[in-house]
Length: 336
Image (cartoon, rainbow, N blue to C red; front, side, top):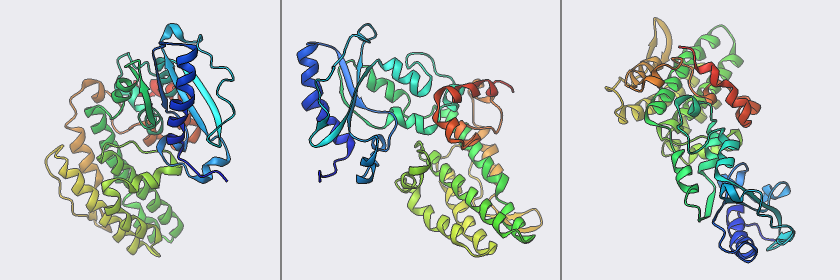
């Protein structure tokens, strides 16, 4: 049995030992870049031996200039296996073509707030994670860097929207349990756990991957280890008082981290009652409103106030996965 090798390492060796020599021999002097980007657990560095049962192997994207696109064909020169692992092939394309396919954005064009908000975070990881093996064109790495993090006011808009999501549900954990809806209380608590985790990604300006790797990536955040005991306790709690107590501990952590960013004047991070009801909440709208008040970009201020980005609007796998489908939502951000 062939020993498992992470596909990023395998594909880099495949490029250097197999693909590059063929390119140099058949297309001497061809300016090109090479990388493993796009979809797949291996691009995130999360592939394991389990991943090898389908759509896994040595593969490389070779980027060429626009005028060379379509003229570079490696044919059957690379074989079916490399170091005992399957060869999935080499795709030749342009940097522009890759970004249009993945984000529906030309990397050389201006990128506005609505463009950012209709890119799923997973799609942004598909262009910014992975590994570049060679950037002979000199354009691939700068294009990736351009999308490495949200612009300042887009980031603040997303933070405000995420805090608003928390404020909309936080008082319902106790209220639903109070009327005997224990399963409803559990579901709402689970929603809040996910929203708190997504807030953690935003606080550290790190894109969140799709569901399969969401929890693993969260634990790689600095805040992940601090939050996880409270989040796990909230999910495991046998009744709403224990559930609420765990959530309020988590609220305090993310509130403190938000204050540490100094985006706005500090806000009391101590949970308190929801009106006169016996439910403790952090009053997430306070953070949402305060952060939104710091936004200065008119294009961001003209966006729907609490809508947020596509990952905050929907968790539909189809919507988040397909570029052209996501792009159709751009018109929904145009009303004020």
